[in-house]
Length: 533
Image (cartoon, rainbow, N blue to C red; front, side, top):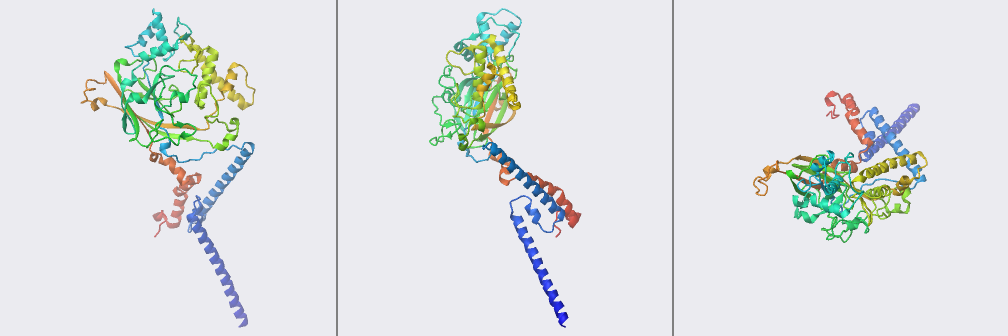
């Protein structure tokens, strides 16, 4: 009896120890399951999910280990870079109210540079190509228009190398399309405006253009830069915004440059442009008729030839824009620009510009090199008193100067990367002085375009002003620009707010493959979803 009692007591103790172990294991499992169900770390909840196969848990355990390894590796590499250069570049998204962002500047350039009724460029071109006699006045005026058109190297000119700037701009203004007379129905944020009040003429690389919401020339260009008449002059608007600091605290709702108060197509900038058929010219440019448009921030001098989209005739064009801003921490200012690889807008002085941007620097570099090589500058380049404008005979020189600057600039960068010595001639000295690094604070507008046929004849069939016209006599174009509704960018914002990562794609793959296979194995093909009750 004593021996039996001892055995019974021993078994009871063993059973009690086993129960304790089972309770501990169960509670530990439940505790981990509770944690995994509420954890924000991708993949953890699948490790703690009960009634799942071991193969699934191995899948997620391996994925988590791989992600952890990548994170640790990146941290180590970042630290090693920090030891050599303590400036770390990172991008952090921050919500900015739309009313703190200026509506983009819109620059419009007609494809027609000279009205055939004022000066027929096509007739003069064929006269020159056929070596027919022309007067000295005709050749001079033709050279003015030719500077805006496709270059014909086979043409020769009996002209001086330099042109009189006043005469040239006065002639271009006289023969160019009357844009301000041809636009109508200008609306901004749902309010009607006089189109002539909100557009200013400006000389660009596309000739005479017109800009909306652009900063005044006194806010962009140096005081020593020459201008023609009142072009790019907006003295009635006082700028209360800068690229580096944004809007002033004292700026009200109706300030300048104009704020983007709301997003969406209802709060847009729109206009209509009418073009008479007898005003078209097909030989000056690419023969594609209509208008070139550049959308840019208000402090940027437009260079339409480099970047633009078109408004064709009898078409409606819609441009949905999304602003993108890059700002650099003030703490980085203590480091030299060569180390942080950017300039703050007010940090570096330019000769022709009050604001430093990479594009302004490149324009100035190109201007200085053209002046050094050719002894003059192109008609659209910034210039000071005494600087000459190149005439038609020096067109080849200007093109060669631009080609040299671009090709040698690339070669210089390659030699820097390869550790080779940079050449020290005049060209490379100019390139080295350029040093056009990006600006530390920048703003761009991403544009999404769409266009469609516009049957404006039917729309205005009962309007006495347009009823006598048809598409054989007149053309009408429509432009609408607005800030893209942020809801339309839901896909990008979803990635920011839900923490989509590489493991998220692993999770999707898991649900589409292994989990389905294991559910079929556990519950049968009938209950492939895993719900067997």
